[in-house]
Length: 326
Image (tube, rainbow, N blue to C red; front, top):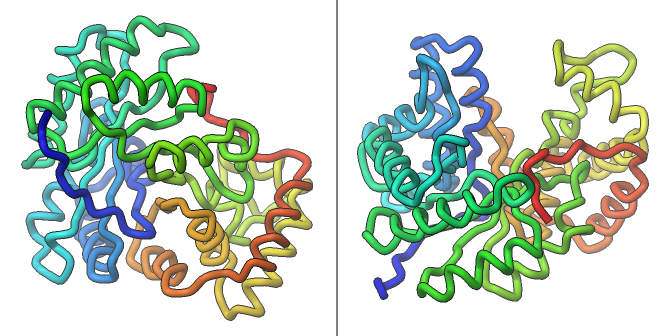
């Protein structure tokens, strides 16, 4: 069994899913310098975990998010450089059917990064529709670890039941599961409250990563059900959820005002207080600085309970990822 390597997991990371979406729809090379500044601001302030996926930036821009992260790390020369953790998620595409295909996918991601992957994750479980494929691909993730090509292995969009099964499979090979990533926020408590993933993670020594901690921006206070909504699908989601989330947003705003923080900072800090690593996206340096303002302080127990109560009363929470397993 290979000796376990150290992976630095800070209180908060940066999720590059936003970069992936933007790269897919309106990428312009002139964005690179701004994104480099986002990266620099994050690392210099102790945000050293960067999460992406090999499916972010598809078509002609396939893997572009990984390429940029590798470039940004090489060019960054400031404090905390030795703590940078590049994490990616490998998608269980229908044409990836063997463990060898997963090893090849990991090697391709490493090539785009320009170095080995720190944390490799299964992007989602295929248990709901093709469980035989999943076991082959999980074997491939284990192979990447045993070959020394990655420092750690994680999962994404797994429920408590499936997590236990996969944990046992990896345990039999002497491979630790480092992290589990789920959609978790004040508007998406389902994986923790109903599936019980946090209790299982605590029991098994797995760190929970919370993606979309600001619920597509709904928890920032910048959108209104009266018409101030973004275009497209995100706007439709806002119109569906915001009317039933007024009491939660009012509670969030009241705590933010009392704390002299933004609503987004309180929402992210709530995730931290729940002992998770939130990974909000950031498209510009100002967004990154705002997110970093969630660090260095903690909501008190009473504030957390008030937010919990308000979240439980939301009539229509965020729709869960269709690949979230149980």
